[in-house]
Length: 397
Image 1 (cartoon, rainbow, N blue to C red):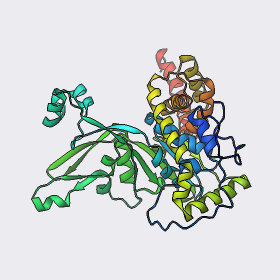
Image 2 (cartoon, one colour):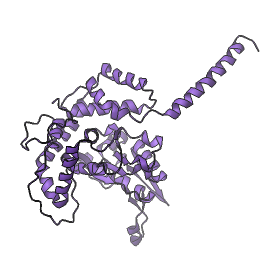
Image 3 (tube, rainbow, N blue to C red):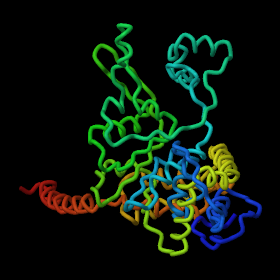
Image 4 (cartoon, rainbow, N blue to C red):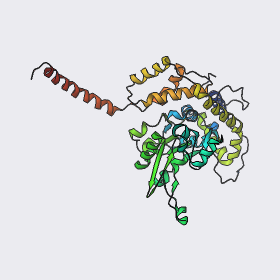
């Protein structure tokens, strides 16, 4: 229970695992399995691209922890991975596919949910769903969350939605769902987010903040939900990220290359095994992947009952104030990520130690030197104005 994700002592331990008591311990143990050197690997001959096992990732404890916490608690605000090319950022995100949780998804074409009726009455859903609700039938179904990737060359119609070309044959004018509508309740991944078209990234941020968006094309319009977890990755060598975009990401992870030679050798062995026969490596981790998925689901179920006391919360607030961070999103990310961290450890109360573990990834890259300098200059002007006002109050010209 007390093992940390950055422990690497188990790099060469036997594949037979001890009893696993938490999600954190499972990740520690499973990612310490060493690939067998002398086992011959045959080419599988498969053209299908299978995801690399998350539990086969070596090192990078903060990266793995941040991604897992984002699956447990979408309220964290997503994750931004910052680092040079070739450090496994994209591989890590895509490897989440087998760990994605089960969610309640609308069974209706129009996306009707019981929450719509609770907030807007029966008129807020389509006639078919209103009838189902009255008859006590479910409006949602259990479905696995999905990973939706946004290609760098996407157009605004690809993202928001455009005119459905198939409707021309039926002489109807209707809108085709875009990637944002498909990302609802899923993971939206943007690789090289710093290079994305400005209009597109602004649309994504607006939709994420509002939880829904409206597409208008000619005489018709459609409104879609957009409740997704945003994950982005970038190489700072290729350009910076605008501050208003950076502020929307909850956890910020600096992804560096592995410094331990044995870790780098182990990465080579596992990647080589995966390239020759992906199914073989996936099978090695299948049991633990299934167990990790169950632990993530259990942590999500526990999350609503996890609390953070005022005493612990004040510790976090004082830290944020000492760092001179203005954005209130800092508290939201720090506290929500700490709640998810406690849930991952099967605890219902956040400890000060949880805040200390989460703080670097939640608070880095939030302080703005420009804003600090701007307010310093403004303070000088405010003091000058105040000095001129004092004589006026005293009746002096």
